[in-house]
Image 1 (cartoon, rainbow, N blue to C red):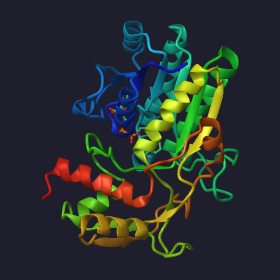
Image 2 (cartoon, helix red, strand yellow):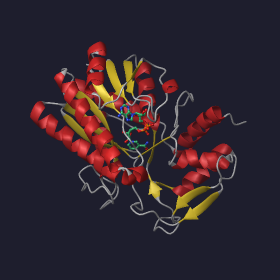
Image 3 (cartoon, protein in one colour):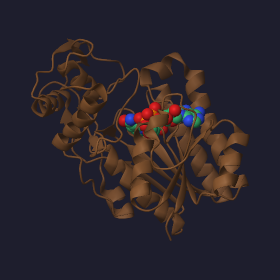
Image 4 (tube, rainbow, N blue to C red):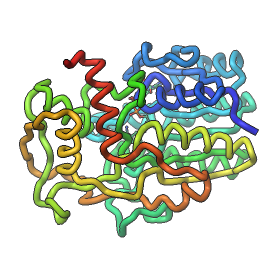
Length: 329
Ligand SMILES: NC(=O)c1ccc[n+]([C@@H]2O[C@H](COP(=O)([O-])OP(=O)(O)OC[C@H]3O[C@@H](n4cnc5c(N)ncnc54)[C@H](O)[C@@H]3O)[C@@H](O)[C@H]2O)c1
């Protein structure tokens, strides 16, 4: 059994729009539900857009009654760590109360399959690397805590009421659709690759990176970059597993390999053929030295392997997308 029709909450955003495209490519029907707070109506190209807020029970109910989805993929959230520290109420409201509302209405309407966008930020500073799913969850930001709380809600509802869910803990989502039909358009943008590309083409001055004195091979922080199209594929596999009766999966999605900030900047220079001007700023509180996933469980449980997540494909796909959207020669 496959998830044929899927409500994609947050499908006008970066990762959700790639999931909508992947669903459409596989012959499924994505129904995007989004309040367009950070997403873009013109990123919804592969199915209908229902404009609504996940915290609005009647709007969610109406969408579920109209489209009768087999499953819900939930991408809709506030995602900025820095902003989450300044605006905790906004983050807990959107990321925790939002999930609560969405799941409550789904269950009331008889939809019990849920694929949730979680994050490696729920782990906090790792005890050992690569990070396995069973490591302690000690998030250091409001954002990370909001995502952990959401997972805990899902666990409780699964146990008590039979919700079937997968929490996919992404490491660093990066890159863009290989046809450049959708990509990353956050504003403000805090992610490394779009900012490095922006700096390389002279959009907004040199880029800042935080800390060059970490105990890594070149002093800069190390992260696990996973291509957004590989993430999208994992969502479809996860939804299908739930359709086949899987009750609960909590899985890391990464490549298992860390790349340092300086290595990523090199890849951006290679892809763009331009220098990336940068300034080194002091370390930021809460930034782990290195984070990379143990991917054994996601490979085993989903039969998923990243296909386009080598750093050069990630960066060149992002470059092609930004070139097109920013009109760079
Ligand atoms: N980008 C990453 O590297 C990364 C890493 C780990 C986890 N995640 C998670 O993946 C998900 C998607 O991230 P993204 O980078 O695509 O973010 P994004 O901001 O591009 O997309 C989020 C989408 O959700 C919509 N939205 C937000 N609040 C809503 C609400 N209350 N009701 C309806 N729609 C709402 C926005 O308009 C937007 O279209 C988030 O849950 C995020 O926490 C992202």
